[in-house]
Each structure stands twice: as structure tokens, then as C-alpha cells.
Length: 150
Image (cartoon, rainbow, N blue to C red; front, side):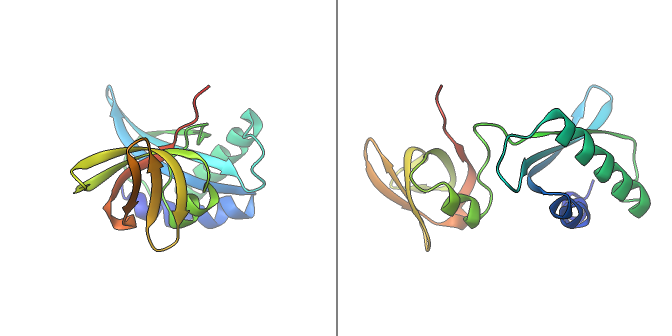
């Protein structure tokens, strides 16, 4: 599955319907391919079951018309969740002041994992951890997500 192609096809339709694509993942579950999409509402209200159903119907229609997936698959649409991934610089900017977790591709001061408060996200990601303040380049981020503890 070409996830970039799928993202490019569905993003404008999702935006028109009031949603933002946060994450897209394809994986194998038993003998089935799964296309898993994580969304949030543009107004930032909680994503409801009805939202997921509406988005799923819309996405299915677009993917079918465009013949974007040339294999059998299961489409799953859900909320980005409380510990949503941070994918773009805009995501990081939106959550300044929040607790996050980051894993880097390359070592930053002899470590790859950081957990703490997001201080800045302009030129570099600045995170305050128990061990001090670290700056991480956006292109060095392997994974990042909010770290909301309940």
C-alpha cells in the first residue's frame, strides 16, 4: 500500500468534512491487510463513533473511486487518542507546555529517549526533562507522542 498516495487522496476530503488525518498505518493482522487511520476533529472536540463512521464511509468511497488500494484490506478509522502521535512541526507547536515522549534516530547527548515538558518547537524541539533541557532537530525524531498520565 502506498500510504503517501492514500494520504494525499483522503486528506482534502477529510478536511472538507471537518477532520484532520493524524496518522496512517498499514499492517498485517493474521491473513488480512489493515489500513488504520487515526483522526481528530478540526474543532478539537472529542471524536465520536458517528464521526468515525462518517469518515470511514467517505474514505472508502474515495479509495474505491480512485482505485488507490489494489489489494483486499480492512479499513479501521479511530481517534488519535489521548497520547496522540506528534508528526508535524505544527503538532509540536500546538502542544507546547504539554508532557511528551520522543525517541530520536541519532543520539542526542548520549541518549535516544526523552520524556518531559515541550518548551519550544520553532527551529528545534526543546524539551525539559528531569535531567535538563535538550534540543532535538525535527529530522532526528523517530517517534513522538503526547504523554498524558491519568
